[in-house]
Image (cartoon, rainbow, N blue to C red; front, side, top):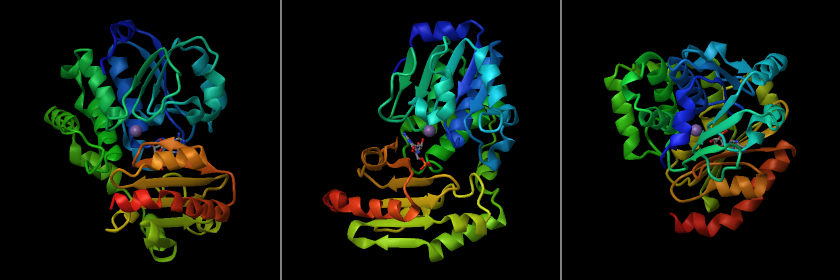
Length: 337
Ligand code: 5GP
Ligand code: MN
């Protein structure tokens, strides 16, 4: 997809910009938002980054993370900032319900809107819609946008480069999936420009607390179920587990991926009773589409191989519902063996 001349012209003139990304921001949400912020600031724009909820601690080390405004913590400040903006940029999401109350707040405001995203089935939420489900990450799209502006040579390796590299690594499972040849070219280009790739990997993966490993041990020993008939594995966590292991934002990130390491598993599910809601994270291998499962049965969404949803039923009811829909997919699961 090409970035339109109108979009490029819009960015050439300094604007008062708010960048938004989704609830429970992950590496790609944070990386793309902060990369875009640093890039736009180089061009004289005034920029704020806003998230609906807090980001995991490991990303605190990213340049600019500390300045991001969090609606859950400071809604009035967020409103004041949003009111002054004439350009909204939506990154790494494609429907306003992904930014919760902030979406309702800004829905009817007059600012111009740009969306850059790689999830399936976008809502028409912006005049300038860059929707590329084939892209590995929104960070890849931000890089391509900077490139299309003729500014690849101006990428600062310690700000823009570091932030883009973060999203490339996290959304591709360290270059294991959802990759296209372009991803490696972008990574190589960033490293060549001086981005500290091993530093980024250390920040993300070698920054666990002891309690996270104990929680992982608990999940694998006591909370894992394997359903060979459906090539599906499941881990669940109760509200009590949340208390016992003092689970905070980000602490459960990545647990679902361990299920995929089982040879015969095609679908992995992590179903956990967060303090206010039950959250589902589904992952799959190959052509099995968990986005369809999340959308059809749980009103969620995401990507073909990585998707999520929320349930307002009890933990048990949600687990039972998940198991009860597996027969519908059994043929597909086995024909994709
Ligand atoms: P995770 O399971 O890590 O929370 O999310 C996996 C993918 O699905 C991410 O790309 C995320 O943006 C998307 N996703 C997670 N939860 C939801 C949801 O409730 N609705 C939609 N539309 N997408 C979701
Ligand atoms: Mn993403």
